Image 1 (tube, rainbow, N blue to C red):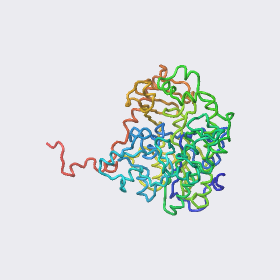
Image 2 (cartoon, rainbow, N blue to C red; image 1 turned 180 degrees about the vertical axis):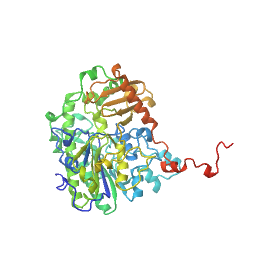
Image 3 (cartoon, helix red, strand yellow; image 1 turned 120 degrees about the vertical axis):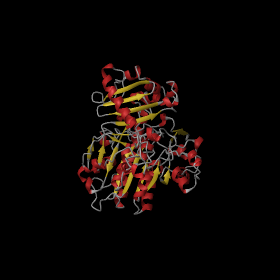
Image 4 (cartoon, rainbow, N blue to C red; image 1 turned 30 degrees about the vertical axis):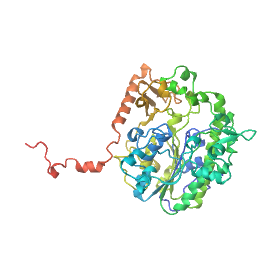
Length: 537
């Protein structure tokens, strides 16, 4: 499976972006892509997308975990503003989602894959809304129309036996109560026993499912079915892949495409472990960090992680060929990104939750087929970009008005047109909540205190924690973030500047969402016109 033959240049048909294909991977690091310079991992389809559009090389998520990050993507607002910081933290019912912004523009917004959206069922019921009513379903589905919703984790204790992918596997003959675990995410022992994918030691073995029946091709197939169903109706499809998120299990042949000789050296030093920041020290005690501290674990897991990425790339190639055959490459904006990265043992850590580049910096490629984007095809942008910029970009591309009193990001369309936006940001922000992680107990924090806030400029990254010292990294002299200057007296002035940037960011949150700037401009000074007179003598 290869990239579409026409994916290296814009098409020759009508080139007005009326559709949006919003592709997101889960836990994909920006530096594990071919166009980002990975010496071993070949990603020809993603490279072809970069050749057709703009690769934003300094794109950052606004939360370092799946649920919180995705709610920022879907609302166009920071986690501190919308409050849904972590997985399974319900999003308030008054928050507008992607579909709420695009539906008035005549665009159907449909989910095919993963979201981590958690509805605020208690408030829905408190407002007297039947969860099964049309409005109730809208609020329960995060504003999406649902073609396929699969958050990709189906452990036995919370198994929904009728989840579509599980039904699909059983219909193909995978005989199990939980074929997601027993076949798609487990390997097989010498005596036919199931070797659970929850155990990373088995990551080098092939999954028990055929490749064409695994999660990535399944979700790609569902997306293609959806495109055919929608026909000429303008659409925004959120194709959200489950992988390369754990369980780290890949079907043959992807389990064996790479070996431990192709694993990048860990980005860590002994000094980081010998004298760690207190929050880092607490996270280093987590089980996933202890496992990834071992070379054997990294050399077992990361080749499979790479194989899962290559599988996504191959099926994206299949999807691009499909779009070309349907004539959709010429009228569809394509966005490729990830919700966050994965430590994989860097900085002696596993999983995510914190603010190193491995986690918060993500791939972001945007392909706009329209003629006004021709000048930027195949270019790379070093602009500081945030995930919350995507909704304003979509509205701008579709000709709508961006509600700046609610949306906190900015349109990327000027960058796609080769224009220099006025007063573009010089700092990106990210905030996290680790109140449900055992590091909080280690640090003796109350849930409200288990927070971290990042401000990152071109040169410096500053992270502030509650009740613990800040972190500071000089990215010009220390691009791999190995030397924490958060307690170095020589950098007190830099920390003060970064702290003030963070404070200004807090002051600027869009909390007045019921009145627009246009309304306020019209209303300012209008009391006398309404017969209301202040302080008349």
